[in-house]
Amino acid sequence: MIEFIIGKIINKREDYLVIQNNNMGYKVFTSERSLSHLEVGQEEALIYTRMIVREDDISLYGFTKEEEMDMFNLLIMVSRIGPRVAIGILSTLDPRTIKTSIIKKDYVSLCSAPGIGKKTAERIVLELKDRIDENELLLDKTVDMNEVQDFVNAKEAIEAIMTLGYSKYEAEKVVKTMDIDEMRIEDIIREALKRLSM
Image (cartoon, rainbow, N blue to C red; front, side, top):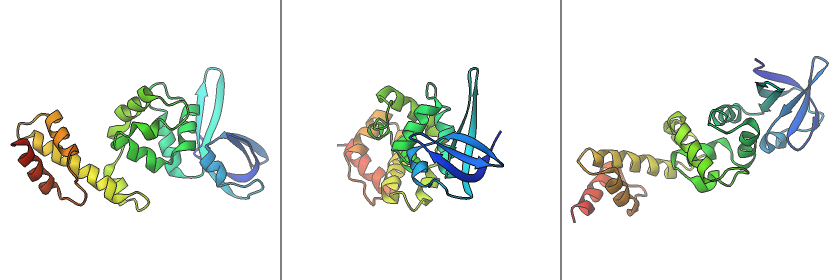
């Protein structure tokens, strides 16, 4: 397994780069995002890599950021999503946006990536939702923390309402009708119960 390569950027194409290390040139498929951070002739570039071995092919995929590499590894775990499709997703959406889209079930954002239809977006959410750390997103200063926090508060409020005997459908329906911006979880629950009892 090749964890990373440090070397000189020899060439850049539409979907790959060539990096020289110890007199060898490695062809590394990558995203448009990673390519935009590199310049031909750049010395000492560090590319995090993943080797994909198949019956008829051995390819290297790599990225300039660990978080992009980690998201690539998650995406290719989804059934029927191969490395090239994962590259296409990462060329369209940054890792934080993908994570936020998964926890919010934002299929529209995921479908903006090439080759991703609604069924594939639903499969990404279904298979990766338990692998995304919501707390990590809340601590990430580049993410709209208020938006993510509202989602987390709504989720916890819905779960609490369900423990009181209401169905998931009833709990989600009433919370979705509420403006929960800057509301505490207990306030969301209290208002939801009030509306459910009307």
